[in-house]
Amino acid sequence: MRIDIVADVVCPWCFIGKRRLERAMAMRPELRIHRVWRPFQLNPDIPLAGMPRELYLQMKFGPGRSATRIHANIAAVGKAEGIDFAFDRIERVPNTLLAHRLIRLAAEAGRADAVVEALFHGYFVEAADIGDIAVLAAIGARAGLDVRRRLAAIGGTDVRADDQRARRLGVNAVPCFIFDNGYAISGAQEPEMFLPLFDLAATAGRAAAD
View 1 (tube, rainbow, N blue to C red):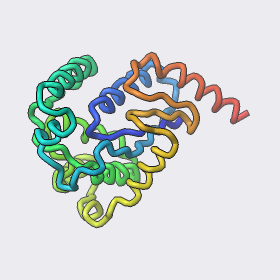
View 2: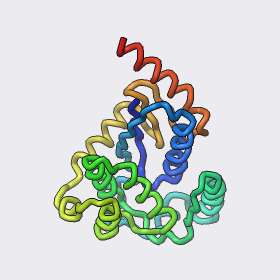
View 3: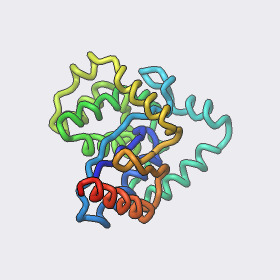
View 4: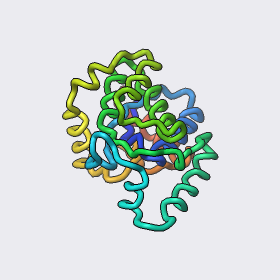
């Protein structure tokens, strides 16, 4: 079974959704599931160098403590999934174009899942700048990848094209999980919500094989 996951690595609900999907997968250990990570940039207009987080929050939420309340709620939900969100330590909001390029390069080596986890953990727990090539190269190196030159040399046209393709298909919020190019579910759903789609996709797969 193939699950295409449309997500952005600066989306906290995508991180939570990843963990909940993994819990659902553990409930169906008999299924062979291949995850394919698809890019969706929540903030494509942020400069490639990123921008200060405080400025970004003011632009998005305005003055006041709205962001603090929202992040406190997300942190509480994340805690239940084993995620220690460190929103207060994040200094810059990155443009994620290069991070998505790293995921694509990792997929070529069969290491995309590990790199996606490292990007989420790096940004939300370690407060790393995952728009910085040196940071991304270090994440790649820990996954056994030597990608610095390729990250620096590639313009990201393929990532932008994939992002636009998702939007044309009607994806306007992430995470979005698409099962065998058919059934789809959006949002950081509880693990039990994935199970009927697992079963539907598995049944359709068996019928196609007959």
